[in-house]
Length: 495
Image (cartoon, rainbow, N blue to C red; front, top):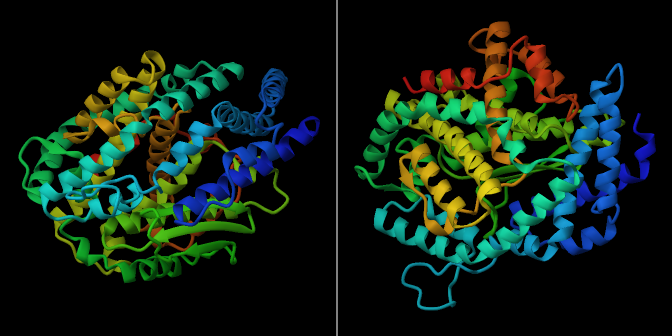
């Protein structure tokens, strides 16, 4: 087992708890409970080079065992990956804190504002941006957000270099984090290029009036406020999910473990996020009810993650409760988010009667999401080779234009790149979710999402928490890992 790492694992557990709480409070629009510096001081071992070295050695020994114990390897891999992130945080805590806090500070000068009086936090500006109907006003707000965040590129570069150093200490070649998913990114973009150029371009023109020369804010407006948005009133979203849970006969609150926060606050982030506060007994799910299908999709995605964190038994190893393969976490989110692409779910649960063009507008949002993840993954890989600077920014803007047909503001070109592979894991999770849906359809028919027997399979997945890897789940379904199921599903949903 992992007894030889008892002190390190306990310290890592405490750090994971503190980081999860920090993310939760920021998403909920609450004041921070602590700082990164205080967390690092309280968990020195988990954030040290020695901690990374211990985990690296233990993982190497586990991989050399004959026979190999897959569960041990999976847990040590998850532990090492957390410690690498902690080590990177310890190398640049000030820059990391600056970036983490930047979205909640009054930095954005809205159009027409002559000075700092009336400045908005980026998260508040983003909340407003998505629903502005006048295109010129949206463009002004998006430019203001870009201008507010671009000065943080220096902090981003410092955090990026710290991550590269931490990865090197763990014996990981940074670019290889992304190279493992090259077939996913290239396959997704190649397989859906025509779809975005034709249907995506037409829907953008229909929704925003722009013919060529679309910008990021146009895509955001289509995603968050499509013409059918009024069919999804904010007050009905929770009832929609409860109707579905009753059909499926599963416990939406995981026996009280999932704590739902639906209060609105000025700095609350849009959408929904789930974080393990004290798993499996307490998982925080913060949700901002808003009009439109995207808010419903984000809520469903967060429920998938919350169920994963609340599912394991209380005596499960800490890695199964707090950590795990990030692709599996993204898969649990995407699996339920995909219910938006089930017309019968929309009719029966959301009580929404939509035209086929409205259904396509919802479907194209899923295409954009997957393609944006692919674009960020490729741009992040290039940033490891080129450095997080002007060339990486240009590469990301070019990839964003390919992914959506819209321009990305220069000030945001480095904002969503990640040194640890998160965009690639998101895409891998979306691919796994598509294959899981095929598996569930084969076993429970087309209406798997309302068949009570499906809950048995879902609970079996969630009940293992972070234990299985994406490779384990692919193998259990008897399929080689790949992007084809996702590409086929996205194309079919848009027909």
